[in-house]
Amino acid sequence: MTTAVDQIQAAREALSVAEPRPGVLGTLGAAALAATAAVLLAGVMILGPGVAIDDPAPASSTAF
Image (tube, one colour):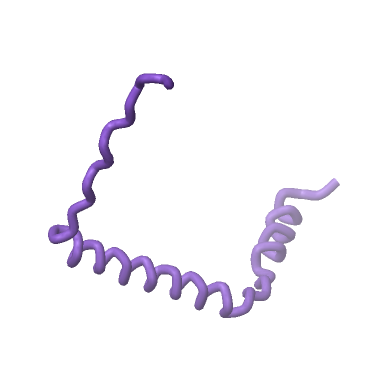
């Protein structure tokens, strides 16, 4: 039967092991996605007030 001190020591050893970090490719991909979103949002903010989207004509509800 293990004591509380043994369990605490085992938990400390389990938590102190550093896991290898994944490659930087994921980080670069996330940064590229964030940069693309920022540029697109800036474009929408700049072009937004001058762009008008016309609503299509309402669809006819009569059947042929």
